[in-house]
Length: 117
Image (cartoon, rainbow, N blue to C red; front, top):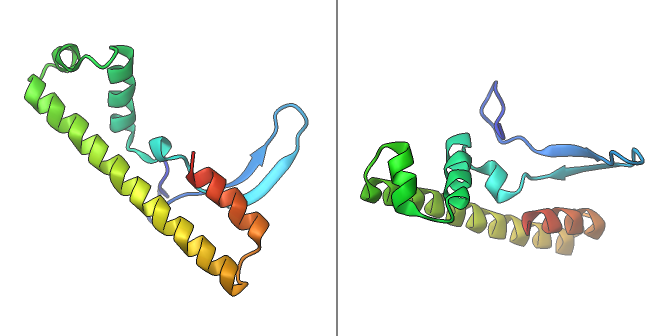
């Protein structure tokens, strides 16, 4: 999950470790957009991709009508658009913090790279 079990706040990755050499990167890194989707939406997208984007077949597998499946897919698309907009606002905020001297450019660059993934 990408949300705190206690307060439901958004979780961030704070340490990434290389499995090969043990190098650790300590920074507040957001999860990629697809990872921030609810588990049910991630599964739906995985199933959709594994069926080569065949909505009719996906609807059959889920036991619902094609229009209902289209609505579910559209909801996921809308969620991704919202996450993308949120990331763009966060990028703007990071740039403002750099310009004001409140954030080191190196830290912001790492976060911006993560937001683009």
